[in-house]
Length: 600
Image 1 (cartoon, one colour):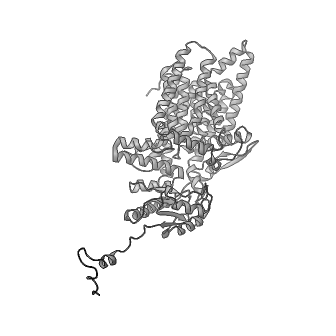
Image 2 (tube, helix red, strand yellow; image 1 turned 45 degrees about the horizontal axis):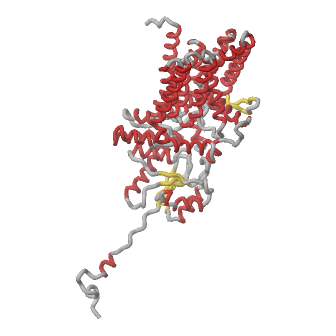
Image 3 (cartoon, rainbow, N blue to C red; image 1 turned 60 degrees about the horizontal axis):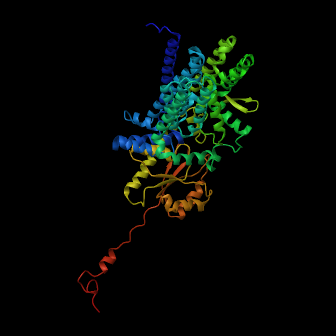
């Protein structure tokens, strides 16, 4: 078989083969290290949404599926909805990871497109390899959360923006807008990246060649319209709840649990975002090379401006370049993330994945170091691949180095995020699950059966179950997954909260008796709350409140980490025994006293 003749086609084919290899590797990893083991709280929540969507389709068809997708606010719908579609083929817990890996493949392809546009096919392929082997891309492609889909759609939007030729191409302008809309459907916080995209488009349009501006503004409007129409498919019904959620968790009281309180314009807030880019997405070696590359590009830009006869014209041409457009998206996204103290899980990944395709542009201007730099990037990528493979446990462990101004940052880390989230509370190896950890899925299945058995008896005022525990391996989310997967029904579940109101018996007693909260009939507690996630609910206080309002402990269950799960039930009052009163009252038409006793 002959390879295509052009260099661009050859490198595109090489990248395509590489994408297939990365997809195969990720599928092997997921089936080996995730199948049969617990999900973290977020993964379980998103999986339960996908299962709800799927069961709605099975029971009520496309209309039922669409209605289910529309009612999952404030969680963005794209990943769960696509997962529910794949579940038509097979219903299980691994289907979501297949969809996730598909977005990983799309991210690599879009990264190549951006790099090829900026620096040519050879350096574009290098940038795509760096993205694919970065710690963030590898680990988030194996955790069922929204980081990878958001990163993929942002990369697609940037690629379409570059291909639009400063909004000259109508099809690519519409494609850019559609990608923005899909990015918003992938994750609600992705609204932070929208201003940078439109700012990059406007600056590129207005910096040079202002001919044909009406047509280009029309295309920019079409981009905005296509973004709005795609996003409106879900936000039309859910905009207000999403805004409430984002403001509460991004800027309100709830944000206190997800980041340190610092002023928006401060070194502390800048460092908080940079820390996540380094430790969660790139690691120190790659982050250092990216910073060096950006400095080198800045030097090239300054030299060109200083050497130009018309420096103003040189600055404008620089502002209109594709490289600056990508830089604007990165800088604006970084600045937007600085406005919230909520660090989130994978919030920085979308902008971090744009950095390598931009950084490799520097190798076009420093050819003397191009080969050593490419070899170093390849070595870093291969090391990340080995660390995240789980084949060598010691290599996967977290290792850090002191960075001036940033204290200690990770330079190697192959610990799967899903494992790390559970290991924060459940003892075991830091890099992988063990056979004992499979017991968490069994515990969810057993607890869901226990609850449904009681609900189906009809002796409870209602079937609402409230969780007092805030455990990382068994929660309302994981329990809902078990109910939907094994029993094909959902459970009415809610969570006992310590905020607002405080971690007090009185607060929990109020929640258990407040009609607005549903008056639950079932309560789940544990014998201890060590390392539960915040805001903490003290289990002893929750149980004391339960006793006061009529709950009785009916069943216990041993959990894989040695804890004891306790099921409490508040049953409906027994109806009064009216047998005696019926026998003592006279039958219709009979005189009193004639029945059951002699007269007089």
